[in-house]
Length: 263
Image 1 (cartoon, rainbow, N blue to C red):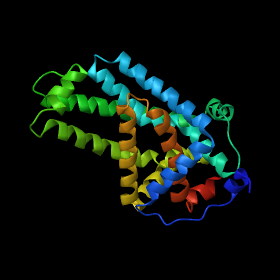
Image 2: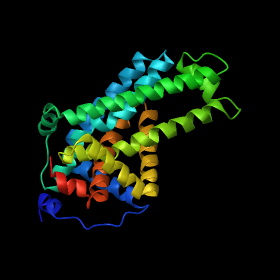
Image 3: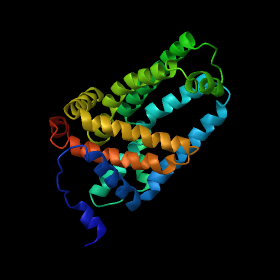
Image 4: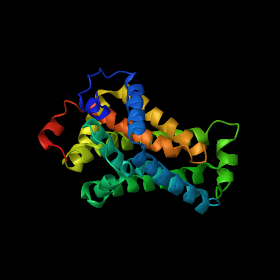
């Protein structure tokens, strides 16, 4: 059987459990291998943008923190074209880079508005983080090395752990609002509010699975950054394709999708 015909066959349903994130990663990797062009192009552009941010803010910790916080929060929006690639592969055809660019040129106002909201969330995190560290740090934090020496590498438990905990608490609602919502905005014509409500419903119905999925996304993103951003060339499209499969599995019976129709 031809690969495209095979891809068009409906997949067997799987129960959602703690093994599901690994299945999503396998399916995402399969999509990347079958149609690598759009994914690697996305990953390369994001990698180059990350390297540019590091060069631009190399001596200013708060500018660097702001840039990377915004980058991490908005990056799911940047991967919307890859959700379309995975959707096309499931239908038995390959979407080229021109088709992906066409999705961007369509100027979907829902994605633009959602991206702006995510940018505001990133700004809020940076301001909150700056207030915490300025209040509790024994010395002013101005450069990245200052943060490393006086916050990360100190022997006493305290500021760094509080900073991480606060980051996790602020990241959790952003993750819950976006993990299903962004692929749903690509897949259907639902309004942003409905997509976010469905995303929260999904996370609330599968808290352990979605927590594990969030940890995997964070760890792989960290690996990509620690490899001088080069790992993001592959990790970004891999996670995007895997996220599409997570969305498809977790919202298979969603009344929102049935009522709204495909985009």
